[in-house]
Length: 417
Ligand SMILES: Cc1ncc(COP(=O)(O)O)c(C=O)c1O
Image (cartoon, rainbow, N blue to C red; front, side):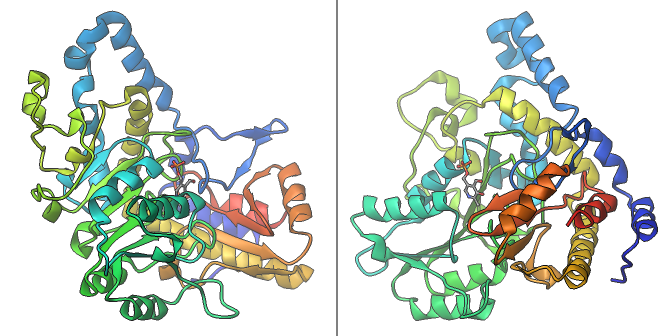
């Protein structure tokens, strides 16, 4: 990609951007009375302007219909999770029956591990990426303990000396090294700290060849990069919706379970009534009958208000199309990297870019690691109207989101250094 470091070139990129009109569909937070430069979609995505209307529809039905809204509402609440399945399936590359919006991310990870972490005396280890998100670390360790193993059941990958990210060849070598004792391989799709996008297809294949199950935490991948979980033969995945799915703080999460597992009734699972066969659910019978879809992992009825926001946001994402979003994202992130590299030279700034420069190994996030003065620089940027993200001990994470960030956002941001 050819880039120039000038405002006119930047504005030209915005003019050519076929997704630029989507920015108007979101509220941009203000700082000092002006639109902020919001580069924090990796933490909390922006509010779709349509969110309120979607909630109002449900509030109105509740006010007018009371309990009847379950069946006679405009979007009958009993089936609310169906309204997001098409869009979610497209985002992860799955059949509709392989995905469902439900619960919260860490809870879902535990529920999925009930089914897919089945350790034996010989095969009980879990392979995870370097420095996984703490909640995942706690989840896998507590699952191992639940089954009577200690922390030594967890194998955490480490980058090579002097490197920040993992090489796929090293992940494969680690799987091979532990092939007789691995029960589960679980990685983030995109690493929350470094922004590294993992090769999910290759990792899944290697895990399966070793005889282990393979799952992904897609918190930083959903709505960021296109995926093909079904074809990649991934066993399971879970995600949250408050980052690139713009569905609000603590918004409803979601899961993927590969079709090949749906009819396996010997798979252990923690059941609830929403996983019971939908047709007979209200017969309220004591014996559980599985839906035989990803919906079987549901426990409770849908949190309709959270799902209303989710639905509002997914409609926008579906309209934009994940492939179009990725196309713009590749250019937007490469532009950010180009400008940062120029600025580092110009001002002799002391930071490293942790995120791979290969576009196939990253999503929209770039992480900068400062040896010194990182916090001062971050505070200066914040004062100037940037909303980004600080991670101890010295990392600023920046995520230009193709749906609502412009090339000019990125240009303005880098010029504030
Ligand atoms: C990669 C990753 N995994 C797990 C979580 C935990 O999410 P939750 O609090 O929704 O369970 C987060 C939250 O930001 C995350 O970024």
